[in-house]
Image (cartoon, rainbow, N blue to C red):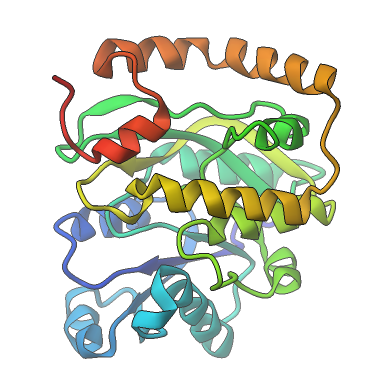
Length: 279
């Protein structure tokens, strides 16, 4: 596998995130051939293009398109301007870690590289302090049983897709305001695309007050719709029970770390709290 393959990274932004410089720096630090596209409201294009000369800055899809419309606009702009082989996106308050580059290079060097790659994600607070690694499914085969129990088994931060997979998926579904990323990768999974977990910490997800993902009622409703659409067959009770046990056992150190830093709080509770520090 050619390690010089081009990775398309799209960053949707309104242009006013205080963490945007950190996000950009984390992308530029990767040991990969990257083409970076920043998708932003039209009035910010000239400003951000001057601020980040190594990135292609393009207009997003407007307010109605939201974050996922902005990502689609970034992909479309890349398609019309240059060749790329892999895709990921990273929000303007999150960051890619050195493990992302390592994971991608490991996949490139494999004799049978997976077309979809994911890894571990660090949960951090607004000040950048680590809370814990987010729980994840070590084995992609666990994904259906976990989703049917309302457990989100991985995070999109640092998740990469080969170009042909992206082309087959045809972009993010804008009917979903908060979970179009879940719909995107679950469509790939349901279509039989092989997934590979790389045991590297690939990205950071920052908790912030007022962030969209803190609206957990909408998140849960969208997740239920997406799961029922793409995984209509519910795994057996025994399969669900066994998978949940394996998932909990694998993630036990993460639960312990989260308890030490934030007490007895679920992932949903942390999202609802935003960046607020535990009492």
